[in-house]
Image 1 (spheres, one colour):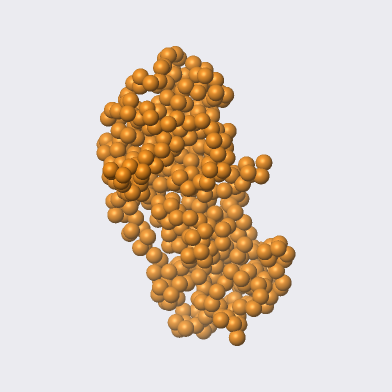
Image 2: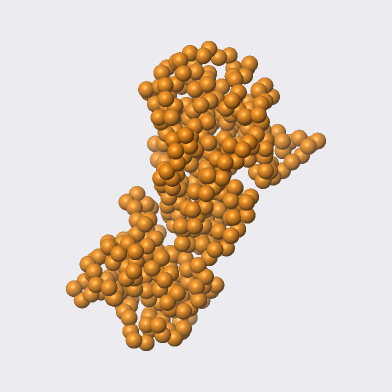
Length: 241
Length: 233
C-alpha cells in the first residue's frame, strides 16, 4: 500500500520510466501499477508527448529561443510592475485545489513548519506600503528591507495594496542579477483587514540575500490591471554570511 | 517483473508504416469481431469493448491513443521500421494476452502495450550498446532525425506546437529550464533541485502545472475528430 501510494503521488516516475531510469524494484512496482491503473497509462502517454514535443522543438531550433526568452527586466519601476502583474495573473491561472501545497508564502503563521513539522517561531513584522519616495523613485529605492533571522522564522508581512478589495492574491518573486524574475511563492484568498492591510507570512529559510518583488492583486482582477508591486531587499543578519 | 516479449521477433515484420501492416506470422491471429468504436475512448478500451477484439483493433488502439509512445519509440530507435516492429510486437503480445485471458479487463491493455514496447526498446538499446562491431552510444539514438513518414512528422509538429505554447505561457525561465532538463535531457530531479535551489515540492509543483496545462491545450485545441488520435490524453 505504501509503494502504491508513493507511485500515485510521484509525478516523476512516468518520465523516469520512459527514460529507463527506474531501478528493478521501481520498475516492477510501476509496471504492475500501469496494468491496474488506466489513469497511469494516460499519464505515461502524456509524458511521452511532452518528450516528443520538446525533442521536436530542440531539433527545429525553437527550444533554445524559448529558453533564452527570459523576462529580462531592468530596475526600472514600470517594468517591474508589469512583471508583477504577469506574475499575479499566473497565480490566478494556476490556482488549483489539487496542486501541491505552497510552503514559502502562507496566509497564517501556523502553516509554516520546520523539518520536524513544528510551527516556525514567530519572526519580525514588516509593513509594505506605497510611500512617496518609493513610487517610481530612484533605482536604489526599496519599499522594505528584510533582515534574515539566524534561524528559520515566520516573518509577518503586512501589505497595503493600492487597490481596495476584500480578497487579494500575492506572489513573491526573486529578481536575479540578470534582471529575470523568478516566482518563489504565492498565496491567494487573503482577506484585507479593516485598516486596509493584508497580512501574510513568509518562511525566512526560503529567502536568501537579494532583491525581491512582491505583487498583490485583487482576487477578482483576472487581468491584473490593479496590481501593486513592492520592491523588497533581503539582507543577511549582521555577522552572518 | 511481469512477463514481457523479447526482441527476438523484431525482424519478422518490417514494413514502411506499422499501422498499415497485417499481423506478423509469429502472431497467430484469429480475427473475430472488431472493436466497436476505438475512437470513443481516451486511452484504453473499456468493458463495452467486445470480448472478441481482434489484433487489428489493438493496432488501431495504439495508432489512435498512443501517438506519444509511437513517436517516442521512433525517436529512440532512429528508425521508423524498427519502431514499427516494436509496436507490432507490443500489439501482438497484448492481443495474445487478451485472447488467453491473462488480461482480465480491457482497460489493462494499455499498460501491457507500454510495458512490452518499453521492454523491447530497452533490450534493443542494450544490444546496440553491447555490440563491439557497431558500438553506438544509445543516447545518440535520441538525436537521430529518423525516417518517419509525412503523417508522423505532421503529428509530431502538432504536438510540439502545443508543448511550445505551454512553455511560452510559463512566465518563469526557471520553470522552463526545469521542464526541459527533466523531460528532454532526462536529468535527475535531485540534481535539478540542487542546481536551482529548489525544494522537492516546488519541483513537483512545476511538473504538475505543466502537465495540467499541456493537457488543457491538447483537449481544447479544436482540431477535427479525425485528428483526435493525437490529441486524446
